[in-house]
Length: 268
Image 1 (cartoon, rainbow, N blue to C red):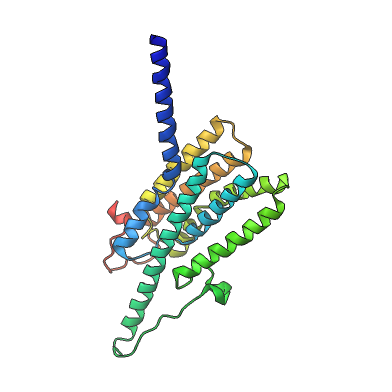
Image 2: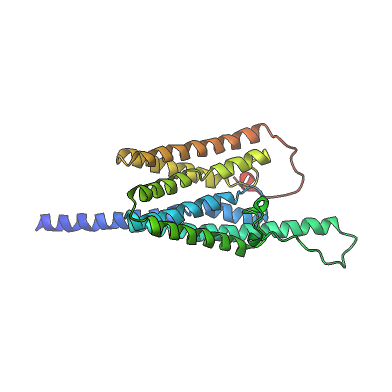
């Protein structure tokens, strides 16, 4: 009788742990972007966040969903990709609105003498197919059009090549490798700005801890080589961004702005 009760208790505990782990997997990837979203909303300044981070994650998770049609993986990982896509679209919507508002305010300050004239911000549209303004469009709907076009193309190619094991495995590797490149747009954005002002340090710390956990998990479970290699690459990029935080705060590369902005770095 005692053994039966013990077995039932262990089963309940196992189910509870599995449920908690599934919830953590589904929503854990979204958590690092909450402080960044709040910082952008509070400061109305999106300069420190690279929207190419959203591009990388959108591509990676769309490819991962398609990979599941050829190589089954756990349902929580599928929901993780869906939730991440929704989150990145929300981030893009916010950043687009902030960029347009900032550009409009800048033009208004430049034409203070002509208050009666309507001030228009030049529109950069996806349908213009101007490579110089790729992923720097003026409307959120243009980003949706680009994501939809990529999804349709990827679905079509995957449908045609789904019987090829080489294509399916290459698709999975491409999805993992693209996600491994997650931090590189932010790394380059910081290098261009010669500053990490406006970037949420909490977000990068959460990236680092999450990527380190994933990499250790891949090594302990003897996951395929490409998984832990890409995991190590992610950790290296995260560490490089944290080094930028230290370097640019210790050795500023540009004059400190006198305009009052509450940035994530100052908040920390």
